[in-house]
Image 1 (cartoon, rainbow, N blue to C red):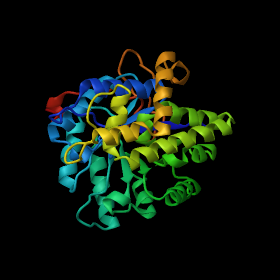
Image 2 (cartoon, rainbow, N blue to C red; image 1 turned 180 degrees about the horizontal axis):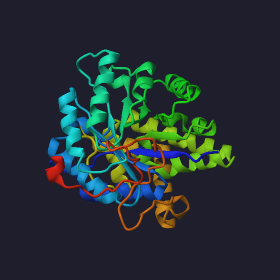
Image 3 (cartoon, rainbow, N blue to C red; image 1 turned 90 degrees about the vertical axis):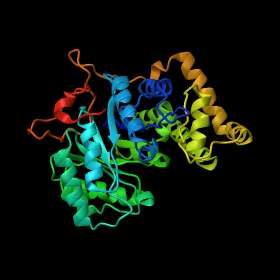
Length: 354
């Protein structure tokens, strides 16, 4: 069975002035790599990318590039409500070679599927890094239909799609692409079904809960892959219960409490989200699954997480990403992207980040 590729959607740790808490970000990345995650996704829904000030977004990207250098892949959300606004954000990202740029369909205004094709093709032509489509209709109220995905899969710099909507629709898309012989990764954002999907041969997974409990996620797919199904099911139950507890106790505000409880500093729910009261924090931390999670964290720290560590390559002394999937993306010059450098390129030629 092909090994699963796990991407964690990273929360954005903020200071009281809503700038990046460097210590919290650095420790969060350390937990990802030591927990067996292959790739980090910043400035997505979990990272509140749409809520960050431009200077905070720039700071998040620059620090994440530096922290993850040579340790794992990095993809970045770049979303806005118009083509020009999203192009402007991608232009800021073109200073770096990234594992990919993840783009929502434009929201607020309604666009046809043909207009979405034009939108993504224009962005792919501008982006130095491969583009990933991001389908999450429960938030954007825009669906990227299967025929649109198939049309966009022909573009050499559009590398895959992250599916956070209906599971059955995502599976149908996956099978439709496979039957057509189209090499276009469908990345499943279905943490509740990680065991079932990985056991059935679905290899690419992304979710925010993997950033909170990366070792549990890796152990689920490892046990499923080696035939230890009962242990995989047990861990899936724990991961699902932890996700349910976080949602029930305030979502991103609950994430702040849980991350702080394991020593990761910062506020993960920017204003106008309200932070949990002392009583609400206690109720969350008293949840049985949270107690088990915190206990597992203590054990993992004591053992150095050595059993979950995966190799991440530092090639020839340069910072490089473990691309794994996808490998189909190409640069504008037609050369395959193979382990791109994470070092900033000349900002004079790219209009890079300030």
